Image (cartoon, rainbow, N blue to C red; front, side):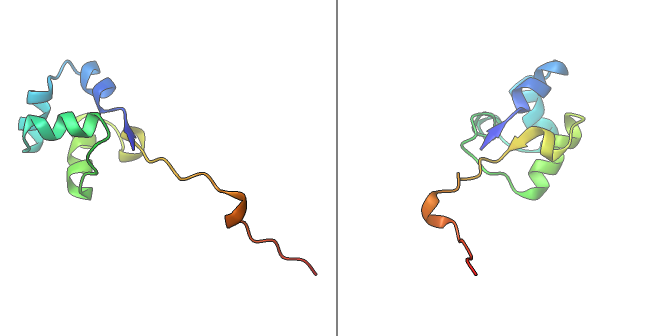
Length: 77
């Protein structure tokens, strides 16, 4: 997972600590979110997005696994 939390946070001149206090988590949680090492609950994702004036889709980019040739299904008549 990738995030744009740092980018949006910087636009509002918020520190990681500021954002953490607003959404009610520890600063380390924000660090892990920004590094893509933590999948937030829907509530936390919503609270972060609302605080940063963004949508969840704008902030969080989930990497889909690429489709492999073995996983394709081909139907032939």
